Image (tube, rainbow, N blue to C red; front, side, top):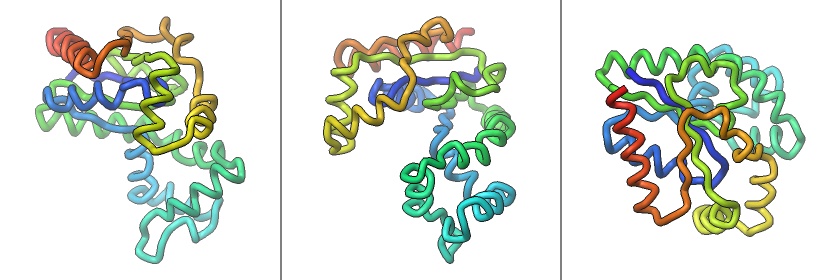
Length: 197
């Protein structure tokens, strides 16, 4: 199985690319969703989060208390503390998931993560794909998608790295400069490259 890591700034179009690849038959693993799942399913992570942030981090039913944890992490500046509990366990968990996907017959496994290039398990990937779009386009798209103000979106963008500076780290760069159909066509071309590699 070909294992692909994909990244890009908020609103760049990486989720659209992943949707195309999923339709083409790829296994897609979204880092944020996966991390949230691990926070519920992994006993070690659960107990460390409870120890660090308090038992209110989980509901009585054992679900993640997202509102509480989000306030603790983001509003009180403790994101790094939360990441330090989850991130060290991600590489092994991602490898395990990709192994399971390969056993199920998937030809391509994709890991979608905003912080992909900061991770220390880049050796896992056969290809690193970077999706880029100009700021104006990203701003408009995220405002519509999340019903957010320009100020809110800019604040989120400013917390991310400048992905234009990461071009040299990527094997493939997809520039989202045209229509949605243009982006989908580019995604299909890249996917065929994976299948024939």
